[in-house]
Length: 482
Image (cartoon, rainbow, N blue to C red; front, side, top):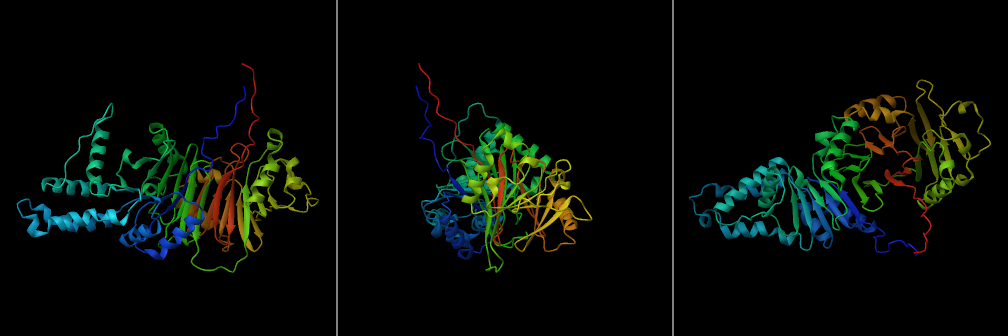
């Protein structure tokens, strides 16, 4: 009997395109996003909030046949609140005072804005209470018929949350799915293999004032309760970050309107549900004259040549296919791997870290260049590559785990005070992949390439970060007699 791979499994997965905080820029930003997402084969679009009427109308035209997962904010709720104020007076004639048919028609008119689009929307706690109040008013006016919800072995609290969500859902077109604070934030993707969390201020609630270690504890508690939950999306912060925390990933795709990070542009992210490949990128607002450069960032390869003799060949193939020309190895490379012939077509910048390798002369390896420590701080290595300046800080990965976003920003400003044109910091040590866009610098920790086979690429001058894994070769087919 021969075991063969299951060819029924998806080979590409779903590409989720994520953007946020358009703040009414409308077609000016939606059209570029639509063109970019089409080019990148995006299957599902997620917007994490602060999307206004002009944006919604533009999305209807630009995304006519694609699933939309969008987060509504208080501004949109206020728009309908003004139209429903007259319903507070139960004894007044709704027909005379406002025009019930007009009100109902305008509420339902959103169907025409999102024809054939499936939308999942995230409501804040304030929105939840506002819409519940409106639902009660409309129910008293005879417009709504309350649904009965049947549960089996579900807590009263969750029953109440879902009942609230169901009431609010009646205000939205049938092809929308809204979420409210609590378990209803979690939305299963088609196929049932994976769920995602659709929110707006998740980063503010956890990450801006708490270190990575506490964030991991909080998110893993979600996963303990909801086993298929793998992706958390958030907005509101107007800058990009991504943190892989074991089983899950949290993403802030940045902002289209007034991004606060150093990279700027109309920011977005793309996540593949099968490979877990993540791209953090942006649509540039200007045409840069800086040279094109694509580098790979790796760290902690250790004794991988002994554990996987074909690893370096596989890495070279992957990076060549990605268009990479330079490699930065942040540290912990085995001495025997320095000068690997598989990497002869790349320029490799490395910091061996292990033992006394700094005493060794590596000049025989013409395409390998040792990173040199800064005279004032041995932890820092500043390196110029093709006109760009980079900071490699060896053990900053440990510091990140203890810092909030605010703390990272203060620390980074001190690190680059002598090198103000340094816009990217690479670091190592901890296995989690991490990227943070700050006002003065972008911090990148690619993750452990030995245990996790993680690596990152950086494409300049666009400032596009890609996080991926070096694939394993498939195991041979198994044959046995029955």
